[in-house]
Image 1: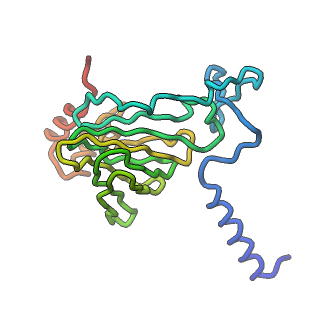
Image 2: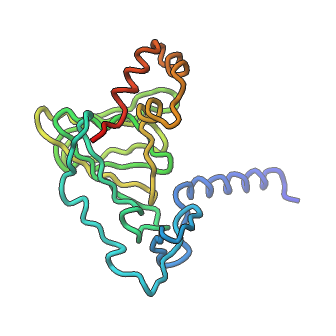
Image 3: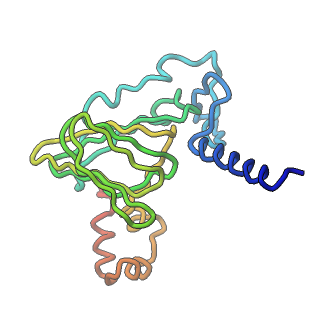
Length: 221
């Protein structure tokens, strides 16, 4: 039996190892190009036969140009994750491009499976995240600068560059970081969150809850 002090050290080492590998698990082979059509999904996608792998499985040109913004918040996210680049499967990384109109906002949201780091391509943004102690960590960042949003914490970006557009590239330590937009999750979920729950949580009346739900509902084309 291990002495108590050695047991404590072993527990600490195991805990440190667990935290060190808290993002996507390491791959056990050179590559595992995603094959969503297989229908098999166990914490990732099944692998395409290596004989059928091509360079296109590792290529995506979708971040080269600004995305088209046609919403009321004034921003659009173009993802470059495993759903767009099958070769990212099991590699634990992905990118996104975010474009903002003047005054555009990427509303408060979280990435449950990844830390995010943004690099400003153009413009100036006010960015921030909120800790579990309800402390806001915020800063204005400019072209060529970087800001980090810790895994799972609520964060946002807003274009503060006057009447100019802005854009960033975001990197994640997950092939599919997931995005949970706070307002959309609470007010446009299916089935819907009960009005009385939202009214009490936000200390507003039911009429205002209905108004918010209507404003946030996806617009029919």
